[in-house]
Length: 159
View 1 (cartoon, rainbow, N blue to C red):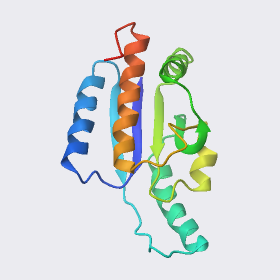
View 2: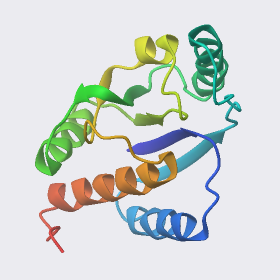
View 3: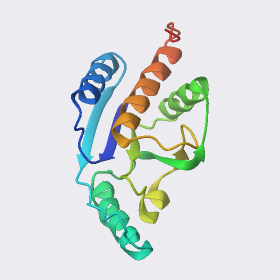
View 4: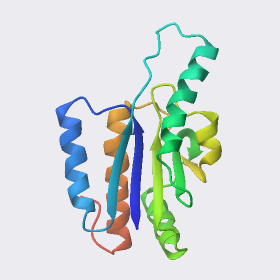
């Protein structure tokens, strides 16, 4: 299975980049991983609702341009389903069994995802009702995908 992560913005801190690199290396045993970054929009601190919507739309257009037809899309959104690690592993395994060759996880920018991206998504996934830095969310997501593949393979995963 090919797993693609589409994320808004660049990784700036070295420790986040190192963690992403580590999980990329670990995941190479289980799947083909592709990480795509799209440019973020600078949001003024006192942006109005219409300006925020436009920013999310522009970022959303960039995200959607990276998603191929036929891909199964899972958007990270605070209102999404909150499975445990075993539940995420079951979901990934079921998608593979169903013949989905590409699963795309989408992490939006600081304002979230556009309505168009949420409509394109097959489902929404949430890790918490709390807000996390988007760079950290990449690391958390990659760790959970790695943990999922370890669970699927029947390997120890709780270290």
